[in-house]
Image (cartoon, rainbow, N blue to C red):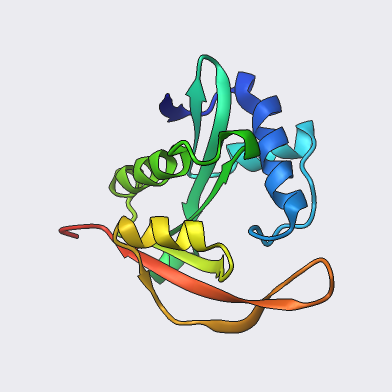
Length: 162
């Protein structure tokens, strides 16, 4: 398994994985699914986008971009998506570690997650094991498909030595 920058040939598999996570409705804030045209624009607009692949099969992906602009443009944001069939194999860890290595290469000093859903305990455990810190809890910050709300936990990672 390797992590590399995405290529156009990966788009169909990336769309499937992204839409799978969006469709589950329990991790990403997005509600709209990607099609070929919107995905090509979306992934190309990121500061960096990578895929975890094994024998040309995309197992997961991440996007990396500024969390905001101007005086806080040195703070990045990222999203990670792993296919349901590839979970539990360390794909997420590899993607997060790869994204952390990309931060200084793109001028970022901090990686901030705005909305980690509180029930996503596997992600929270992974992030904390890699040095992320919880910033608190935003009560009822995530709107679920059934009309209820769940808490979200903003998290932050500081690039070492910067």
